[in-house]
Image 1 (cartoon, helix red, strand yellow):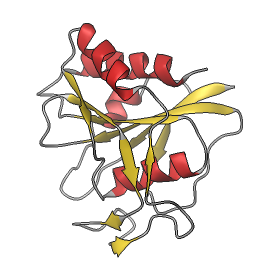
Image 2 (cartoon, helix red, strand yellow):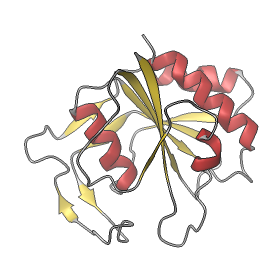
Image 3 (cartoon, rainbow, N blue to C red):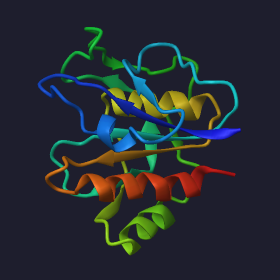
Length: 169
């Protein structure tokens, strides 16, 4: 069993999502097209490190909570734009990551990479994907990554490597 690393492609006005570059060298990487599709992960996945772009952030944000709300400010790549709908009708209001998010943020910062804990993954596709992973019972953590101008590619790749050590059994 091996861990999975996920990222998103372009969305909205973002013509190139840098999470594609950050995760490119990881085996078993999956580019998520829309978080509203059914959750399908390869057989043998032991854990997931999910990444998404946070255009206005300047540090790697380790997400503590995924909430059961999809309230998209813009449509996703499939054109869906739920407004205040549950991500999973049969799910609880929220899931806390099973990962030690404080420890992970501290480990990333100890590698001289700016990082912090974030208490919300928002209500867009990143949150919906994170919620689906946790709802499926997968050990997972979500990293919101800033633009490459804020934190260089090499440091973001290292942050994902560190996160893999926290989710892998």
